[in-house]
Length: 229
Image (cartoon, rainbow, N blue to C red; front, side, top):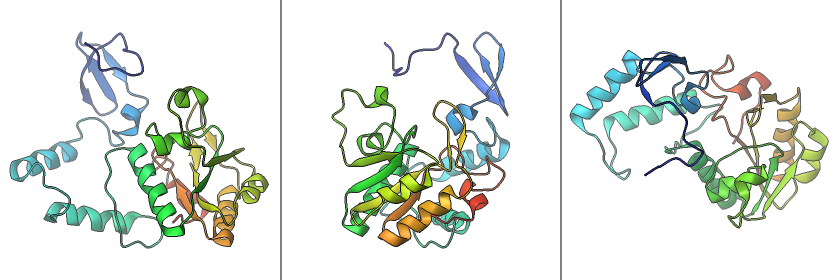
């Protein structure tokens, strides 16, 4: 029995400490990907372990309709850290779910359907996020919705030309991470902001790879001085 979608690797990881993970034979490996960016402060950081243990002793789960002290504190902290000013936080299980939610919010707020995304983008594997993911191998066989228009990443003129009064959202990564590291050129994110403002569209930044300090600021968009919606 296998639960692997992407192909099973030949080593079995058993434990981790900081940037190092260990297999069942005791071999050590440097985790250069921070476990798909899920361990930005390293594996088994004592503060994280302590917080998980403390919460587990009080309450493991309560549905989202009921506030808890810990969840409310997290909302407040995330609101303080988010770019710009916000009074709303939506907790998700994964990057693809976060992008799904962002696209739903944008479509609901604007009453529009079309999304502008970039070639080479990766935003997730669920159907809405997959529609904004560029590479064909991820899309094949899933009848992906065709309401996303792709433009060359970094081409500000092409981006501005694609955004109009039918655009619900522009969805971009400040630094693309699919198949390499592809930073946005100077002025590109500013152009996206201006195009969205002119058309009344929402600007969405996917910072699954770049957020939480991985580029030197808490959010990569801070370096461009651009605040998304």
